[in-house]
Image 1 (cartoon, rainbow over the protein chains, first blue to last red):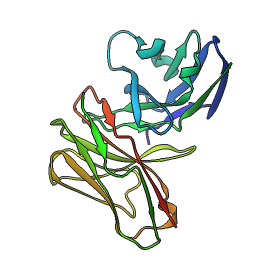
Image 2 (tube, rainbow over the protein chains, first blue to last red):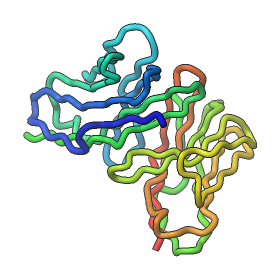
Image 3 (cartoon, rainbow over the protein chains, first blue to last red):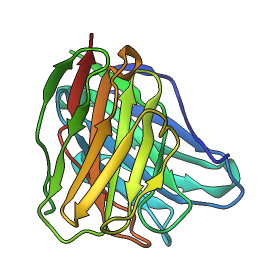
Image 4 (cartoon, each protein chain N blue to C red):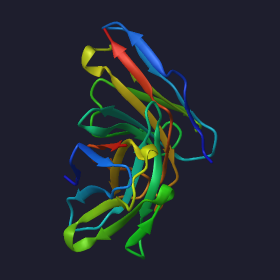
Length: 113
Length: 113
């Protein structure tokens, strides 16, 4: 079965440090790829998506992700963490049309002052 | 922007009760989804629907059913609630094919005693 794996259920960084959240998918067929963010007591919001074209995708709040087909990865980065970035982040993939997404386990990001 | 509204943010029910979770979207999106969110497991798809009166099983449909009588409304039903159904339930709506972007509701946290 196709799946999405996020390495690290908890990531802690200092304010101003680089944020790197890892995501890998399990298929030789590249899917559409997404990162969503969930702030406390809220639903999920789309950060960015990769469908086709440029492999480096820029999203909201200074986040970006790079699709690497050879590594089946779609890691999320931000050059400088802000306290407001503390949230849970979900990587998701879709191999079909019609919006059906497969989610990773989630990574809780903590930003320390 | 599409808005997805879940009628109940917090519910407490007793084992064996019938539970209805309601979800309404305010745009004309064909696709609607119910996910369950548990720590360390990410989001798992329970049921989805691509059209009125149409439903498809997701990855964990056991113990659940759904109803979609109108395009804007998608209900999740727990016929006889059990303690292992204590969880956060997220409804989402989306437009396919291709873009696969989902808009999520704020979630319904269900506790079954």
